[in-house]
Length: 416
Image 1 (cartoon, rainbow, N blue to C red):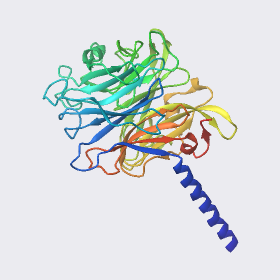
Image 2 (image 1 turned 90 degrees about the vertical axis):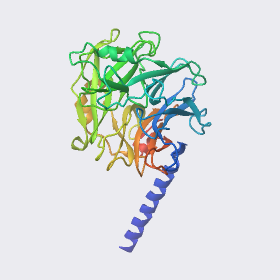
Image 3 (image 1 turned 135 degrees about the vertical axis):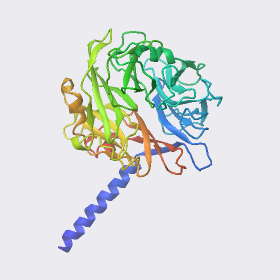
């Protein structure tokens, strides 16, 4: 009996040692720090890998102390030129003026995409001094949208440009009425890996919109002309909030939207890729009841990502879906759920996608909220999120971690 107990203790020590070693393989950088009650808070993680391999991370610098609509907000950035191992100095991407009611009063809630074939980068932002959810923010007084462009992998940037009307006008003739207020879900814009019918591979921006929830817009010229995916008379996720898009391996478009207790998912299937014609499926909720992406006692911005992987059991190449949320309770313990996609990806429906996710990998062990992620060249996941290490509650420390798939999936999958 004593021998048995000694063996149990020995195994437990081995497992604990292995777990510690695994954790040591997760590198961490605090990119922006909201370090006291008197400091200016940071929020809203946004990240993209440039065509030349640089990684650009952005965050709101909230001089007003709160969301856009309550005063001046700037956007700050940092760049890694070696795949995320080290990061350059903090810089100002764009400054708000703080002038009340001016379109350039503030800039924030950035979403970004870097072109896969060139050094072009697009950043879409909220600007101005309206509050998304206020009744005074209407089609006549909208939540404004602006953009920045770079043509050299983020080294230099254009003057900002407002594109509010080109987005809102897409829905003015909808049978459901116009969009009163909207913004692009912060974090990232999706670029297709398969569809190219214009000058660039197609990009998708998922809108948090009211009334009637999410819409998705797309562009074949890297954001110069936008169209509504499915037309103005569709509602991809009527109860949805802050969303992200991802592309299934067969080219269908997946939307993942913030929901109380988890996520909403829906899928767009093309009938004609060239014209963009197609139809959305039936939205499905994902939470505790379906063994889905549960977010206990919270609704929060997260990210969806589909990556190639190798199943260690038989060395078979597969695709994994990753979904980040605060595991809870409330906005705490951000983690990443994962699931293997079926070999016949055409069989995936919103309902099947929403169910039966694996036990999540817990990234944070404290108060934590918004997150976004990207696939790195080495196959690891670059995970950028908000965490309260030393902040006042008005903002967060903005943390970047590089996480191997083997660690995220408890050794079941690898990126090689």
